[in-house]
Length: 122
Image 1 (spheres, rainbow, N blue to C red):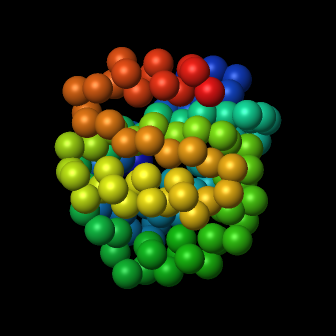
Image 2: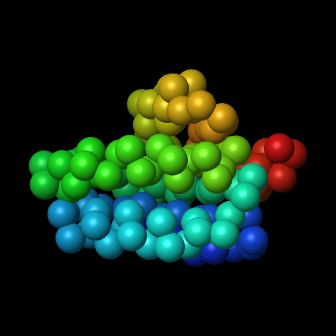
Image 3: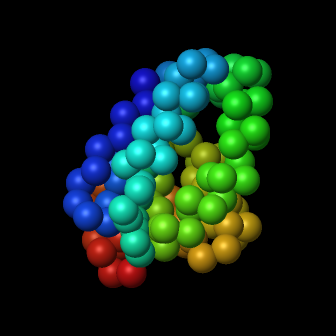
């Protein structure tokens, strides 16, 4: 499952659970592009409920669209990641170090209130 909700003019909430296949990845990326269209100085709240590595074909689709996704990330300044997996929190924050202009901070899933407050501070 990959659901994207536009919570406000500059905020997307993304829920991830389960394993993405090629069709799911294509749909998720298309939806992300569509819902990000008019966002400026945006923030994102990722809620990683259950994480499974995407299928090989899903990863191939993501890599093929990576250049356009990096351009789209310029619309966002902050992302909070909710996950109970320690390694995902570390990987998420590392991504924030390599994506210019995007600050990523990870929280446990029970810290949603703190994550939302952090998004608003930026």
